[in-house]
Image (cartoon, rainbow, N blue to C red; front, side, top):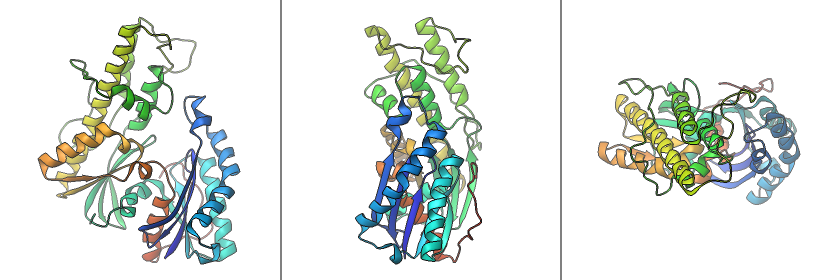
Length: 351
């Protein structure tokens, strides 16, 4: 089955054509990072406007790259949520228009389930049941995948997502946006030594996450080393504390903080994911989403997996970030089960 996937949940405009849920014929992504970097995060109104400008070009390129004509498409999958409402509506509008014009079935896809199915675009040896950890800028969620249609949420963040914590910590350290890749670069080859940040909700059988306390602990450490306190004239606490003009000692301390923060996040994600795998008696663990591209997390997961006899599997870095191929793959599964949506469905900011 040839499925067109469309993804516009946040700041990537993406379209892909996938055959039988596993073979990617095209995968086109237009990123908005350069635009949002100026603001230190995604601006929803700008994101929606840029999706509107890019969607036609992205769809045209997806068909051209795949060497497929629109009338050859057998189904259309589009991200319904969770995400930014305005951004989602751009993709949903385009998908519905094509579904009407081509008289093809359409399916609104859960973005997080899409991340879980990215692994099937590259590996054919991942079987159900398994545990899935989706860890990204907006979500940190644990799923028990009993089968392709039986996906149960078993743990989630109670406050910030891991990727959001990376972005906010990078901001207060004066490192810029997006935070994940910058903090990983800063932490590379650095031993945090005695600096240990808290790991929340680590009690046995608790599969939820919390990163707000860790984020605040980093803030307190930065205040301590800089002598700068939170400014009352700036809403919120997470404005940059460290300027671009740094002494060598402060620059080194910033790298130590980045390494200690990254270590704490990786520890929590690893412990929780393997706790879930053992609780449900599975030997495979899918780790996906933007934060799953982090090299330190991958190394820690693999070390722990070797120790416990549970294999963590990761999509390639490209498929960890938002893309439309994963949406098409998930939609193929739903179509194959005889599922589709009418044209009345809308966008969902939460799911």
